[in-house]
Image (cartoon, rainbow, N blue to C red; front, side, top):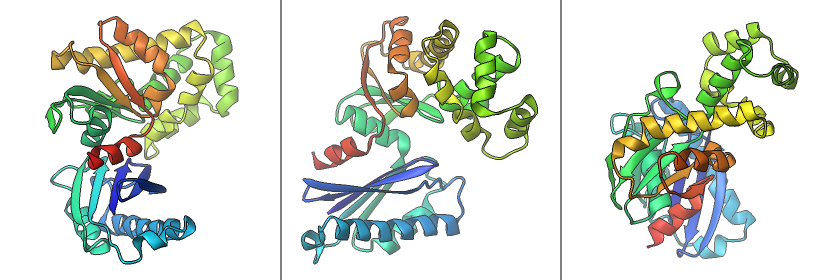
Length: 289
C-alpha cells in the first residue's frame, strides 16, 4: 500500500494506492515547508492521516488494509527544497512509521506525471509558474521562476496583475473595465490595499483570473493571454535549447487556457504535449511502473 501526495501552497491531494490497482484520494490544506512552521505542518500531516483512515472506512476498503501498513510515502510539494524539508520528513516518519519516505519538489512530481520515464520539458502554470528539462529520471536544468514579482510568467498571479494594471490604467475597452469592477465589487483603493498591504497578494491576483476566462473571446483579453504565454516560452522554455522535445503542463491556468497556450507555442514551433489539471493520478502510474 502506497501513499502519493501532491501538495501546493493551498491544497494537498493524497492518493492511497492499494496493490497498484485500487486508489482513493483525499484532500487537505496545502503544505509549504518554506512558508509553514512545524506546528502548521504537523496539524496538516496528522489531519491527513485521520482523513485517510476515514476515507478507507467510507469506501469499505478496511478489508484490504486491516493488517497492512503503508510501504512507501511519496510526497511532492511546493517549497520542498533540501534546506527546508527536515520537519516534514520527520513528521511523515512518525505518522507512517513503517513506510519509506521520499519528499521531492512539486516540479519533479509534475515532470514524472507528465513525462513518465521519458525525456521532456515539464512546466507548471497555476497560481505560480515553473519549468524544467527532465531526462526521464531527474530534473537536469531549471530556469528559476523568481516568483510573481520578478518572474512567474504566465501564472495566475501574473495574469491577475496584468489584468488589474490594464483595468486601472484604462488599457482595456471601457465596457470590460466596468464589467470587471461590477464583477468583483472592487475599487482602485481596495486593489492597492490587497496588493501592497495585505498578505498573499499572489493569491488575490490569481483569484481574478476567472474574469479572463469569462471574457476570453474578447480580442483585448485574448491578446493579453497569448502575449503573456509567449513571454513564458521566451523567458523559460527557449532557454533549454530543445525544440525537439514536447512541452508539457500541469496546473489550472494551463488546463483552463489550453487554446491560448497552444497558440503561443506555435509562434516558436514548439509542440505542446500533455496538459493536466492535477498530476496526482499519473503519479500513481509512475510509481507502479
